Image (cartoon, rainbow, N blue to C red; front, side, top):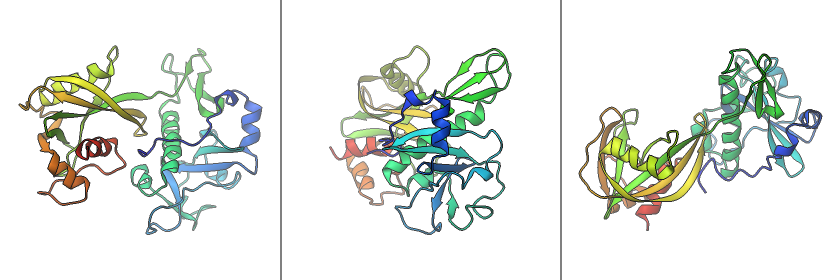
Length: 305
């Protein structure tokens, strides 16, 4: 399973509009609350603990004093009969060392945290982070500029001035591994460390199909024409809120024309090299994205087939 996918919760969307029900579950002793501080989850135990580590989930009443008035409290869903919520405690100064969470664990940025957590917890974390991030960015109406109010357990905001409704958005992104014979196309973004190569990716534009976006991005970034495009898998990617649509594409040429604005470099990687890197071998200072990224799974699937 790809990290951030496979969310085990029943989202119970039919319950979100029932304010009394949501409020009752928010204070139910059986419910659990996930605090996020500046979009970082709380992990139980010491920072040196080996994976898998445990995600910080607490009974109602423990974390609330750390949140600012009106801070987003998100109903994530039901785990059986138990409700799970995410709470934004970004207003707290140092909650890992001061207050009710002191000594219980530590906060960690979501990417490295996801590499330590069980897969089911990465999906819940991804949902919580994406929603709280959305609330932090959308406190005001895009139509008239007035303040908006949280509704539906954190899944809707309403403008008090013009009554416009605002809902969380997910941005579709194509991420594709172009292949030509026994080689795949990988690139190094300008923000990547030296030696790290990945599949190419880009946002789907309005009025564009997935296949069209794959072909356009490969043409723009690497200058190649492609034939067949096939779907592989998707991955929710909460940085801040995207859906990575993983595809394979058959290139019609090996001649590259790299867009140096988008990429530091690109190359065709032979299958033997990709297979060795996937298996943990060191090859010429090259390395691939870790298993947290869908790019790793695209390259792995192709290399080991």
